[in-house]
Length: 161
Image (cartoon, rainbow, N blue to C red):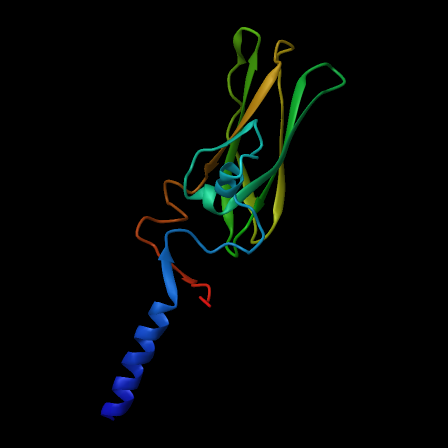
């Protein structure tokens, strides 16, 4: 009986040594998160991720702007989830022209990202004076905190050879 207890304790210590805790869910290998995109110097220039935890699990593939048939500025942003958990985003667009803000920011829109999935967000300006747009991305569950402070995810440590 004592041997089993000692063996169980040894295995528990060994298992803890092979993982590391972190405050966000682990991400899929090869999926560049926003934080990694910024570190590499190639984030989408018209996007801003406003939550540091969110920057560790989502990426922005593209932010494209164009003019509608009516001459208004429009934006399309493609975001993706690098984790195996659902992520809920709030997204909005800020509109500027040659003399600053041309209209109030759009309303926050909820965008649901299932695990390892991609979603599109779009918005159109109402002022013909709009020349530039910027997309803000925020953690929609920040109040409830989908990545709660103190919550820990176990991440396997890479083998060291």
